[in-house]
Image (cartoon, rainbow, N blue to C red; front, side, top):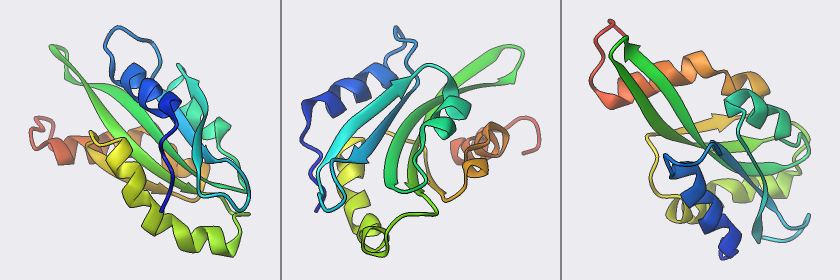
Length: 144
C-alpha cells in the first residue's frame, strides 16, 4: 500500500481543482528509494508541458492535472487527468509496486476524467490528451 496521508497532498489537490487558483498540476514522488510514502514534490501553473519537465526519469511518480480546452468558440472546459509516470530508469521493484499503489493514489485524488499512463514525456503532449478527454466526455461536436 502507498501512504498518501501527507496533508499537503490533499491541499494541493484542492488547489488544482479550484477555479480561483492558477495552479494546474501537482506531482507526487516517493519519499525515498525504498519508501512507500508519497509526498507532494511540486506544483505548477504551466500545464502539461511544465509538468512533463518536472518528471524524474529515475522514479515512478503520480501527477494530477487540470486541462482546459475549448470545444467551440462558445465553450471552455476544464477536465482533470491522473498521470502514472514510470521513468525509464525506475527500479524493477518500484515498477512492480506501482500498479497496486495506484489504487491508493486514486482514492486520494478521486475526481478525474482519464488516467494517463506515461513512460515518455511525449505521452503528456496536450493534443492527444485533449482528444481522449473529448471522447471520455461524450459530447464532441467536432467529429472526434
